Length: 293
Image (cartoon, rainbow, N blue to C red; front, top):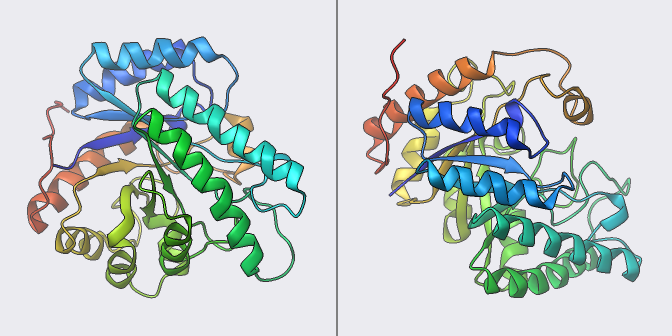
């Protein structure tokens, strides 16, 4: 049964008590869970937010990235070791939140380029780090759902075919993949073919419009996306990831220079879209819209 989540990056990249009332309202709107970025250093904040989310009857998932100083595909072994330790740290924080999924492009450093095409040895280094991370994640019953990014943010994995090959090379049951409609809109030829490619290892889905605003307001073909997800009997999280300039430091880091939609408009209208798409294409969603306009 699919559960529907909302990524709190629309408000803040920092895990703190300030996210609790946002989770409360998302619960009222009809969401099953929230997703937050693992990165801020306050360890206790993760436990507090995780406990709060559980207490109001929701669940949490997490998203995570690594940078050039802890890059799993660095040609320096010491940096790759730092990458593994950083991923383990993220697994610990997800465990603190009682989350069971960490998604993101932590197979390699975000926005760090080699000015050439990826090499086989880099896929090998990534797989080695991720297999060890999978062993650690298994102890907490956490799935690592790797993400392919567009060519402007990553050079190792841009497509579902590349990502599938990497996951198979990792060869660990706790290391899977995710599908993001924003990145696929840039890199894939067809949504249905991309989802068919990734289906055997698919564990998480991000619903995101072409401009990172409200899903359904842009040109993403969500009929094709949800039809394909139904065809492969996808049963994991369907989580909206949209951005704003509410957190300027985070917005600047990912090139968000304008407002697209207000976060609450994104949350309400995005949930409406997901419910409509799930009903139309036969996905077994868990929630229905229960807010009053």
